[in-house]
Image (cartoon, rainbow, N blue to C red):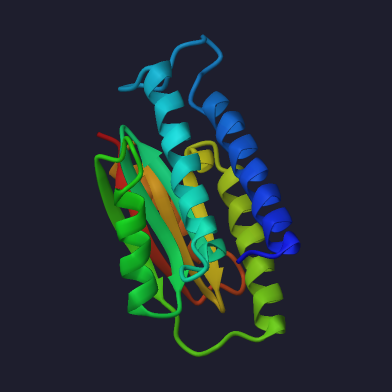
Length: 192
């Protein structure tokens, strides 16, 4: 049975996820009003709804600990990335995501965590994530809004959908150049 606090946290998280999903609809629509190449505005909206629904399912499952996940969707294909404590969480997240209406496929790029992380390491990881995101935003050749950045200790995981191999390699090079980054894992996919 959920407590009032748990319901409040879940409700707040769901509102945030839905708000991000709605705002995310605008990112694929260029200044011309047309959808990103290879997609339609309807597809972008459908993908945003799927992303929001997958996030809600992951947030609603106490066994998954979904705050360590990044969820992205392109044409019904869901890309999961981030870190989990064990294989059972990873498998459960994949199964829960596949069960969401509209999901055509799930690509699971989640990494199993190593040793426990201290508060100091979490703060450092947040700083590294911010630096990597800023560096990606500062490069005009990288569409960084389509790239998710997750950091654990000094390991950066890049995921998302990019236009081509050159953009992918550039994003990895930028992340590697950020101070404090020891390792970059590339889990990005080229848009189809």
